Image 1: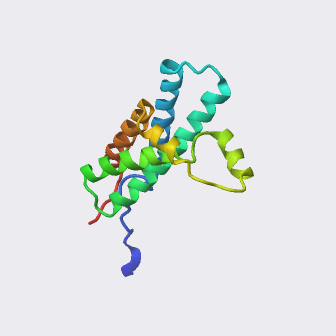
Image 2: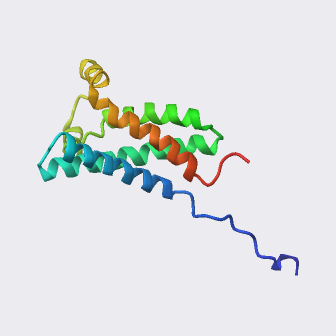
Length: 147
């Protein structure tokens, strides 16, 4: 029969492992910042920050994975990773305790002064660096691309 030939499967996994890897890179980076630089000793604060960093890394790599699938080059991923990493990390994903505030909120507004203060502070450096690293990581780990 003509259909007896086995179809060749592409090498590698399903292509989603880079999201988990990026999430763990962000969580590890956040843990290092909290433990060694800011000296936060509260287990809840460190765990909450690491969880939100994991989610920020996962979301950033998912976003960049889509652009990689469309054929984006390394420089585009570096720039998008930096921008999107800072946007996600400075936005709603500030910790588990912030989730309760968002659920209870009746009027959600943007505090532009607080956003500007964050973007001009040294605390923007870790998400910017991690975003750029995520761009490179996704480019090296993503199995596909436009063919």
